[in-house]
Amino acid sequence: MATKMNLSVHQLELLQKKYEASDAFELVNNKVMMRMLHISKSTLYRLRIEMNIPYVKVGKQIFYIRGLVIRQLLQQHGALPPMEWGNGG
Image 1 (spheres, rainbow, N blue to C red):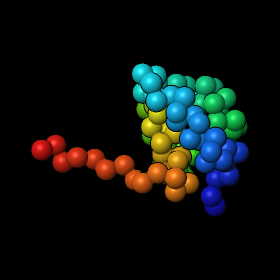
Image 2: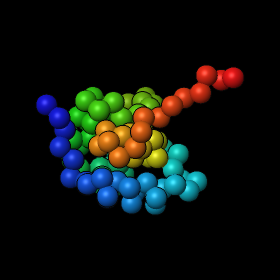
Image 3: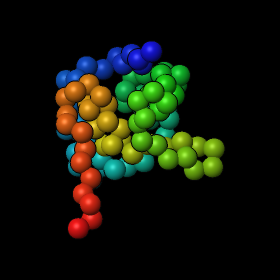
Image 4: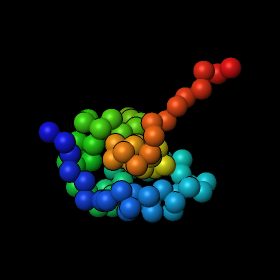
């Protein structure tokens, strides 16, 4: 079952442009991510599980790298090509 998002590709692209600056790699908590994406706590959980959005768990708290989450969601919508990681050479 696919998780339903309230945001369109256009809205995600606007978010990406907004956070392209230095705060793109800012760690944000559940509350900030839910507010930014206009989703519930359960939907955010499903995004973590079903769409493998990147997150970090510190103790009992979960944090997200804002720019990476937006990029991942755009990729899932087919609006961006998959991220290619270099081989370090």
